[in-house]
Length: 498
Ligand code: G4P
Image 1 (tube, helix red, strand yellow):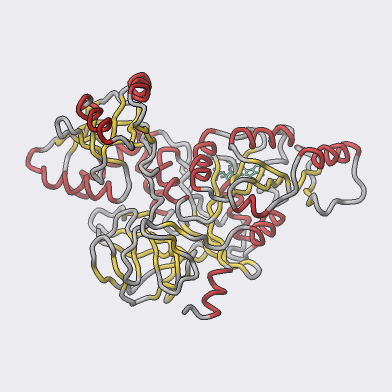
Image 2: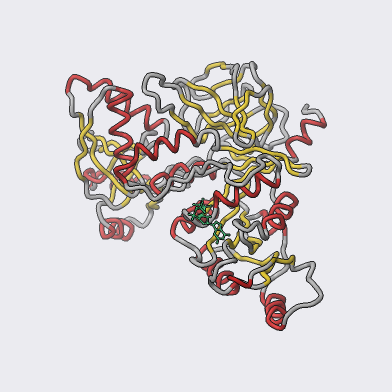
């Protein structure tokens, strides 16, 4: 049994990610939260993990910044009676897949929206993942100190674009140059200007009261207004967040649902961070603890390999420091030094044969054939490709027709990263060949005969993903549409998990 104090440790954890479109204010907000937690003492201390709008050719610079970001990948700190873990997500859209996976390790999310720009593309995509996973979200309408959109229009836009019901918890007193403060709607100041009075009547008439159950189900997002830069409205968000955001939530495994309070440890790997030093091929595997307590130097089962492993220097992340820890609890993230034993999605347990679900691959946006450019180095190339795919750098598909390897990414940058890393870490050379491709779809059908027929008729479009699952590689929207129309009993999924 977990001791009482272990249980308290789990209950006080709040593990979340801040998601936004680049420049909406994620870094600034993170920093203000750390300041409230006393984890840092001066503004400007958070080294932005943000990858600035760099030209694609400058990806070395980007990788350098990613290197720095290991330390800021998870920022843990205490606030009031709570222990907060903020999981950082890369800002550059070419690493969106990293962000998708990080979202599988959080119990809730805060969405930051630039009030002048409204809901932007990347926020919309990330929110889709939250909706799919029913992750509870809170919304922070940032930059209210700038002339921006009308707050009611922002509320409408959030509801429509994010596909979630919204209700305001705070409201802005003024906007742009006249923005001074925010107030909680359930604690309204006495003297209100005519405009605010009107706003409040409208709010009362239109929006439902905050309902925590609906929030926890992922159906309702409480909305806050403020300015991260001016530190207005941030404390209101934080206080509400720690009280209402969920402590670690149950996690579904293929075999059963795992509850955080179970006394046995379980966890899964959601991210692998490679060392950029080519002479030193060590990584950090990030594990989300799903249940119980993780202890240093204790044997755990690496389920996929069926091996017992123990870890002498697991790290936890406190604010911006990495520290070796003796124990960590459900909700926490531990970093395990690794030399190639782990893949994304791997499970560690105290012995049980468990496989966590919810680490789907998403249909990539760009595809290229990868070819060997140095016949003497075929083995190295194979090994390099396999390891980079295990790390989750991109997705590999193999044509069922001719065995050619296809790499799918969410951005051009990843092709460059792969080519560079193959050369420098594996002494292998690759060449890219163009491939006209629209979407990769994972297939599901309750009519096996129809599925077999489909595969037989369309061999040129069929590939295996790295798990050996059938994937339909549609080269145009039209081809996909026709397939959907002609094969009514096949469902075409854009993620690998359904
Ligand atoms: P990101 O991590 O989401 O990409 O955004 P970040 O916090 O870096 O903020 C992007 C820019 O927006 C920064 O300006 C930041 O100072 C500014 N900003 C953030 N919150 C607010 C706010 O509430 N009000 C106003 N007016 N600006 C805000 P920058 O000029 O790009 O960088 P810096 O020189 O200020 O660091």
